[in-house]
Structure formats: structure tokens, C-alpha cells
Image 1 (cartoon, rainbow, N blue to C red):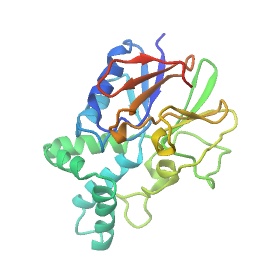
Image 2: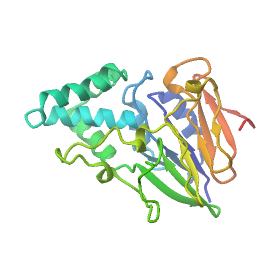
Image 3: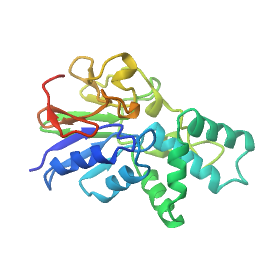
Image 4: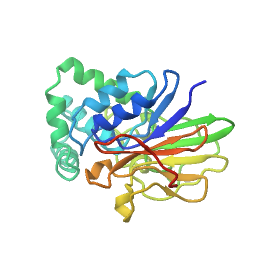
Length: 252
């Protein structure tokens, strides 16, 4: 039986993702917990690789959602106010460096754009799974403090639907933007979103044995940037630096 892996925040580094996929067995499973796009050099390529590989399942991150917001606003220009369109455009393409991603998306055919957006629309915000008797909760950033936990289950975009515009959503939700520790009784929570370098480190962050932040800063494109690949079967960790071969590490 194959192993189950989790990583986060690929950020358009197709070479790093290819390194991960090449080391996986045919019956392994990879959960990538958001942010396939932006910041890195490879435009849509990492996202396309995730879609094409049946071993991969992607969750949504804030950068994926910002790209979708821009796309939907463009497709519904006559229905969205200019102020809202400009706010969404500015926050992604200017403040979060999405302009290169947008250029790459616009170079794709209309059919390919729609295929990519349709895939993202089907992706979960939060995923629950069990591996070797241990329960995991995967989410890009956090579980909002006011979200009811008594009946938590896999969550999708309808959870953060925009009340006014049915084709938009609350892309500022803490599911994809929160930067705080979320504990879920009975589960090990695994997030990304906040890079290790943001807090002056370069390795994954743990809070006890039931919360992990595994974003190690591919978005920064620095020498310290790396992908953290966590095996949920045995919690073994390996780091894949930018442009280098994968290396095992016992650093937790």
C-alpha cells in the first residue's frame, strides 16, 4: 500500500514539484495544501502538473483564490462594480505579485483557462483524512475561530460564498489567510501559508505534536527556500531545496 505525503506552497516552482513526483511510488498520494501559483518562475506549469498526476490532490490557498477572483471578475465585468474589480485586481496583481501569473494565464487558450479554473473551483478548503489510525486536518492557513467544530467535514468554496456575487467568494477568509495556531481535538492539523522565513527561520514549525506549519518559503526564492515534504504514515520529513536534489532531514 502506498504512502501519503503532504506539502504546501509550491508557488510556481515546477522543478521542485517534479522532484517530489519523481521520488513517489505509483500508489503513493500527495496532498498539496494550497498556493500552486505566484511568486515562482513557472507560471501555470506546477498547477498543470498537479492536475495531470492522479496521485495528487490540491487544496486551495489564498494565491489560488486571488487568481480565481481576478478571472471571475474579468468574465463578469458588467456585473461587478468598478471599485470591487479594482480592489481585487490591486490586492492580487500589485500587492501580491500576481501580475506575472495573470500574464501566464492569459497566454493559455480560452479552453485551457476554463479547465484550470474549473479544477480549482472543485478543490477543498479543508480536508480530513486518516492515515495509520491517526487523524489529520489539512487546511492552507487556519480554521476560523468562530467556525463550528462539532460537525467538521471536508469544506469547499460554498463555505465562503459571496452573498452578493454568486461567482465570487470571501477570499480573505481565515481558511486561506489566517496566521494563528488552530488546534482541533483528536486531529493533527497541518497548514502552510506562513513561510518559515516570515518568522526568521527556515524549517517547519510545530506546536506540540498536533499542529505543523510546513511552508518553508519557496515564495521567497532565496537560498534558504525549500519545500517540506511530510510523510503522514510515519511523520518522516524531507526537504527539497530550490534547484537541488532531495535530501532527508531529521530536523523537525
